[in-house]
Length: 203
Image (cartoon, rainbow, N blue to C red):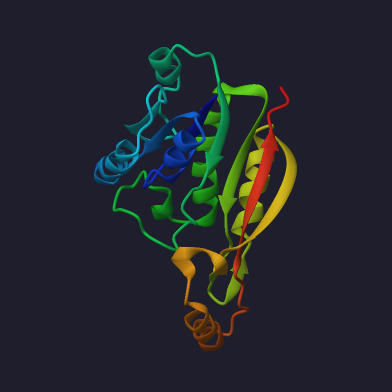
C-alpha cells in the first residue's frame, strides 16, 4: 500500500507508515521543513519501504509524477492535516493555506488540494482529514465542518466522524490552565477537541 500526505510537515505520517510497513509519499510546501522531515524519516528507515517527500504545492502538484516515479496506478490511503486556517502562520508564502485572506479563500484552497490529490486514490479506498475549529472575533468558526463539506463536494462519501480529545496529546500536555485563562479573558467556550473525518472513494 501507498499512503499519501499532501500536508506532510514534520513527516509524522511517513514515519508511522514505514513503522507499519507501508510505503508513503508526502508533499511539503516549505523546503526547510521538508529537509528536517527527511532527516527524521531516514533516521529510522526500513529496507524495502519507500518514504519520500516532495517540495511542492499540493494544489497544483503533478500527480502523474508520483505514479510514474513509483510505477503505481493509485495510492491506497490519503491523510489530510491542513493548517487550521490562520491560527498559526507557518510561512510567508502566499501559497500557504495558513495565509488565506478569508475563510472562503481557505476552503477554496483546501478544495483544490483535495480535488488534485484524491484523483489517484484507489476506488473503494479511504482518506481522512484531521481538522479543528477556531474562534474569530468572539465567535466559533466551525472549520472542521466546512472542511467536511468540502470533501463531500469533491464526491467523497463520509463514513465516520471521530472526535479526538487533544488535551491528552504530548504536545498539548500541561496547557489546561492556559486554555482556561484564554477562554475566560475572551468570553469563549473552552473546547479541547478536533475531528477526524473518514471518507470513502466510491467512484
